[in-house]
Image (cartoon, rainbow, N blue to C red; front, side, top):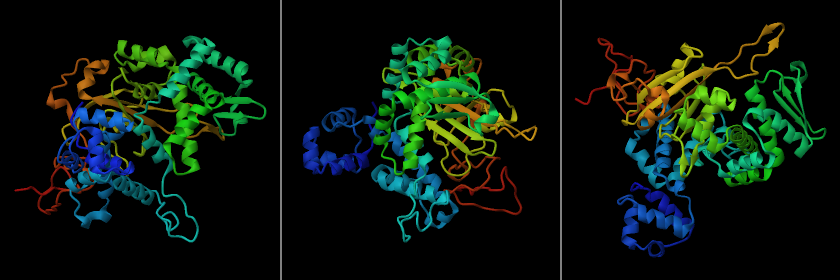
Length: 476
């Protein structure tokens, strides 16, 4: 374990327990002066002190992760890159200090800015109206943060999925039929594959009064199996889901419902790809998504999602990040276990290969990329058209929204993936310089820059033109 500078989180923990520095120092077996240096980030929290923190105060070490500070600092920098803060002269060091010492305040600022971006910063949303006002939180963002805090791994749901396999003798190659049988025998639910015209635009419809589950004929085989398992999650494992939702402390009923749906999706993926078997297959095939698709009857997107959940202590897979975007650049799903920071507000860096994937539909793209801080990643990406989106209207097919999935890991893990074969990973000529977004990226030599960087002075010279309209002033 590395030495960590997480003084703000330690101080917050002490204050929540209503302890003085002397009292907490006594519990940890260190001097009050040393604890004071830790809380002011003048000394790191060593592994031994960190372990005593976990033991004495019964906390999850993940809650003290320095990675969380880094992610919060990136979110803050992205928010502060808004032109409205142009005159604030906020330095990168200021943001890092805030994330490290006052994380709750930093997160509150991000939440407020998020509400502003989504149009929620009205008088009512900010609590200044006559009534109670709407919540300033956005359910999808709350759920994304919740999943990120858990590193997209939920042991209770993994255990629930494994118990379903054991209790009902499920088999991989007859899983869809087996789940239909489980619904019928355990929950008295009949399953019907319904005609499109009877589904009224729905892909799945469950009636708790008649105990009938209807699935659209437009769903692919993997999607049908997924929806069957999703329904079993709510019928058979609602207690486990509700316990996790309650622990998330969401601010609105809408966020509660969205989180419950996301957790049911997690359970469904765990049923379709049992943890131990899927991890072994992933490692044996060297994370070949095609093999995993066919072996477990999954879609490409389902394979990518499941790969991000392999975080069981002592039985971990490659740490992946995942991003899903549409052709307009909107990010609809994001999760990072690789350490990469994904844009949270507005436009992201167009150099990520997940955007290049739209130029070659159906073809898998490979990229070695490097962030401005020097961290490097190996990424694959390809487009997908979700099953059931293309519906006939008036005799003509409606537009099917194309999406792209990006899956990546730290470059240090690239050799574990079959897609890195034949690449000279240490060759600097194959590296694509990327960033989080233009406003937070200080690269001066980027031809794709769409707006000036926040942290550097802009010079417009009518007699000169560089790679971008936004030439960045030299320090010289």
